[in-house]
Amino acid sequence: MSHGLVIRDAHFPGRAPIDAYGNGGFRFADMSHRGSILCLPSGIHGWTPADPAALAIDDFEPLLAESEAIEILLVGMGPDLRPLPADLRKRLREAGISADPMSTGAAVRTFNVLLAEERAVAAALIAVE
Image 1 (cartoon, rainbow, N blue to C red):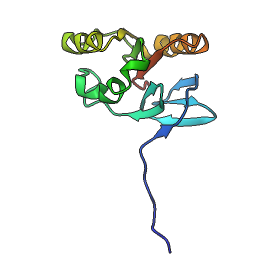
Image 2 (spheres, rainbow, N blue to C red):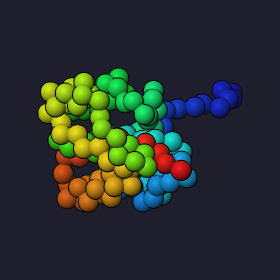
Image 3 (cartoon, helix red, strand yellow):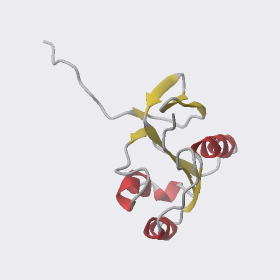
Image 4 (cartoon, helix red, strand yellow):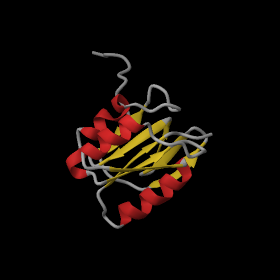
């Protein structure tokens, strides 16, 4: 009996370096994902912030649920550096997470280095064209 097409949330259940980025997505673990991603201790998840130009606390709920395993959060803000909103930075700090906004390219490179060093790192990466 066929149940038709089943659409699931994008999720890779493991930690993996980002092999490439651009063209609106990312490549990792011999796979590709179109759109933004959250790289968390539980894996790599598809991520759709409500407004990439104005990130909010709600956009980071999956990350905050894993805050005990995260010390550093790299936020790839797209092609350019933008500051994180003060209320978001405060909430992350309250959870014991140091957040560093930067361009997505810089965030990918830094994430890969810290991941290789087995640091308690997470990344929120906005896709770039």
